[in-house]
Length: 305
Image 1 (cartoon, rainbow, N blue to C red):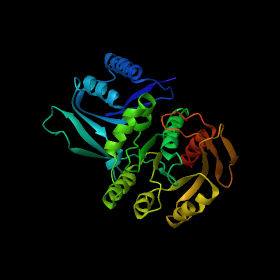
Image 2 (image 1 turned 45 degrees about the vertical axis):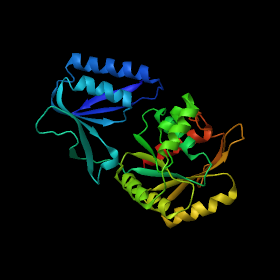
Image 3 (image 1 turned 180 degrees about the horizontal axis):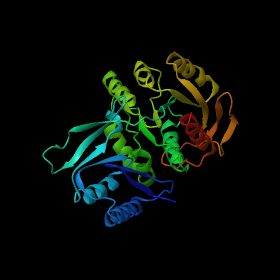
Image 4 (image 1 turned 90 degrees about the vertical axis):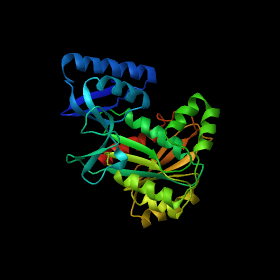
């Protein structure tokens, strides 16, 4: 099974993580070896500009920049957060070419694609939305031939995707960094986050929001198409269902978060998916939980409609 995919389509290098999970050092070696093979075979001939599109880590970006800057005068990287309707937007990150300035953007007309499904994970505080989001991200990567997916945090609380990975290795450091990054949930933040959500057009896009029903969350959630509601008990369902109805979001799953449970349960699949997920503990890999995998399959199904 592949660790990291690299394919050249025209002048766009399509990249992305495979279904096999690996540590950063293994991924870096895999990327370097793959690029060396492509260079040796002439598949990467060099030229004035190459565009990179896909998911990269900081480590992978370093290897790509090192190898490709020796072949191409300029490198542009796709930024899904600043795109527009019908357009993919690339940012020049490396350049020795007079026509390409670092920081400039390139607008590329997007090839026709199926509509994007934009899913918000919502619910009151302490239901484990961040942990669930990170598990869902990994579960989708493990589904063969699943459509491209993209995940972000819609909260100003420092719980980006880095948090769970850091917490698994160093919980104290993760807590310290989160405190440094934590910011107030302002209208300005909400407007910027809503703009970001609006501009992302990957086939499957998932984001979580803060644990309050507020004007700020309304603004961000309005850019979604579907919703998954996480709750601790039945009384928490209706307020979020009402908000999703107000925003015309299709609720596709209701998940009961049982921190002290010891197994998952899928209770029903129609008219919507309902069930229980156990122990959403920050820092733990929950991608193999029955309910997480059920929603991952559900999103793949929706994206193919």
